[in-house]
Image (cartoon, rainbow over the protein chains, first blue to last red):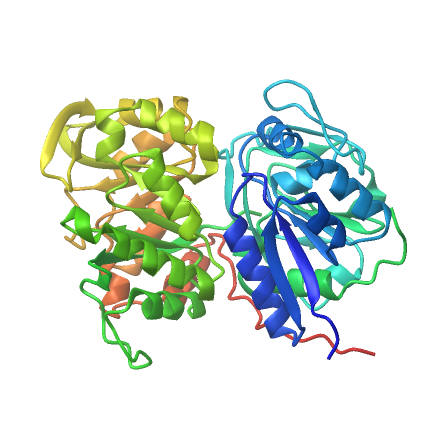
Length: 218
Length: 262
């Protein structure tokens, strides 16, 4: 029997790790995939993993600093991504993929996708955006296949990616204007909404991520 | 477009659902996890557990319930009742809760809101406000399950909660709770005008029209317990009523499909 697909959920005290791990496991089960999920802050385990999931909740700066506070952890993600390991950021984990965050001062992100994380405007609407919003899929992609009609994701955020480039946008949602919902470049992807809390739509995206064979390495 | 959230609330005491309906599909109607699964399949947008366990010794039972629910159900889960400290919150979040609702503890020590927001992020801090009308256009905050008057103005308290970093207000009208006479729309309008946070309306739903009224008064989440527990309405009926009134709801998601491998 082949080695199970190993999935590392990166632990930097950045959010709902258990939920992300459980959802990834469930997604593997539903798609008949032999997988093992670990929640880890060990750089060696992150480098070894077949898939990396980076959750995140709270402020961009806190998450960025939390990641850097654990020796070698951020570097292990950068090294894994450079050798082609598929990466999925969730919520602030997705936001960290941008060039910089503007929450609590200017903080550098991974810089994998253009743009910055800025406060949302959403004139006349409640903030944070909290709840289910319809995903507008921009083009077919392995990560967004099989989502069914009118897929919705569960969003909770008051900061969003802006000034990014169209080529990385797989999906957006409308909240007082277009809000980036799924981004992807080469072997790195991210969702602004919580895939781990988005019922079958989220599980399907996670399953797609586990099965994903990116055509390019970042 | 963001959709209204229809939120069934389960009252949980010592790990068992209080006033649960005996759904035919359930092996054990008192098991909150099984009831949660029914609501999940029925198209609920979120779930709320209210822990009304009387004794402190039994608090750990809610952690077990939350953990078993989070293993099966991939929906946002709010847990309220007995949340006194950030340690209580951490335990609930680790067990699988997404948001914690605090009421009495936040009133007695408002710094708890800011501490929780700083530690875990505003998105998981819900301030539950139990309000009772004291004069026309005036509502007073009550704590300890509605037993203790505080003298605090409910709308001012909502504003303060927002300033301290709450991510959501769960606003319950004690005058309406359990009456089936509808949400307190004046209270809802006053609160939604005073703060920009999302507000979940609670207390008083008795008809489908009441959900529509709550949404039109500005609530973005509509919470109900009895009408769902006793099988008076299904989540689908509520969503249909909202749709008929021209209000946005999330359609039930398609089942998980295994992709064809070529």
